[in-house]
Length: 300
Ligand SMILES: Cc1cc2nc3c(=O)[nH]c(=O)nc-3n(C[C@H](O)[C@H](O)[C@H](O)COP(=O)(O)OP(=O)(O)OC[C@H]3O[C@@H](n4cnc5c(N)ncnc54)[C@H](O)[C@@H]3O)c2cc1C
Image (cartoon, rainbow, N blue to C red):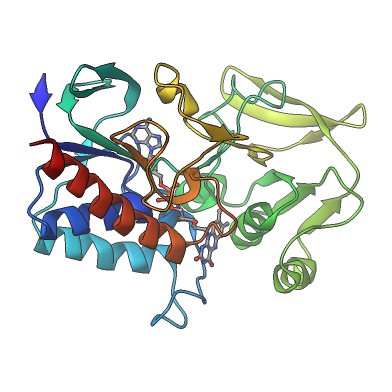
């Protein structure tokens, strides 16, 4: 078991901001990431509301952040957190590779598109079912694919994919598209995007090699890939032992970003708040880091 004063879980905008603030406070900490450094930043094709960067992208912001981490000598440590246990004088954070004994934890795990809501989705995850067009879009070059959902992310991902694949079936459960008006106007310009409104995907079909189609309205549409963006989930199972107070699926925090459990902080999209954006994730991370650092110092 490794020992540290503060564990940050997640390396998205919230986690990285917390790490930068902790480093500058000369704190002893580890930032854990179970998937891709940068989190949602990897997926943002266009960002026009981040202060001081009038027109940028998530990967561009991420590159600048990675430079800042390198400059400050902050590693992103691999570790997919499985659970957090309450110990007498802190917590044990258990990952798939290592356990950490720590005095405080900052949960910055964001939200993820929920999986398993469509029959066949889990079975073909990674075999034609993907949640990231930027990461996997090229595997479907020239093929027909389906995007499922009705929100900004689904529309953005469909637009991105329409530039790579032969045809996008956009399967929307509602009568009309819900999202940013500019995005809706843009998707309507694409000749190779077919909007299938008022429709649920009954099943994702496939064989030993992966996805072969989707079943909608009792008919089969042949596609090689499916990108579902339906619903949201947080990695709340890692908090099952601690049971912090929540509002829906999100963590309740006070103005210091502390949950109702002393030493347990949260930042970014995982927090119950109205505005879930990069600028608020960065602010949350900075505030959580400062509060966690003060908390640890007062324990001594
Ligand atoms: C399509 C789309 C467009 C958007 N456009 C904008 C925009 O234009 N402007 C703007 O300001 N905001 C935008 N946002 C919102 C913004 O991206 C988010 O508010 C922000 O990225 C949240 O950052 P985060 O650090 O809280 O979470 P995330 O970026 O989701 O990071 C969480 C990290 O935690 C990791 N993690 C999760 N569970 C574990 C675990 N158990 N163990 C270890 N690691 C774990 C994940 O792998 C991930 O890397 C957009 C979001 C979407 C989806």
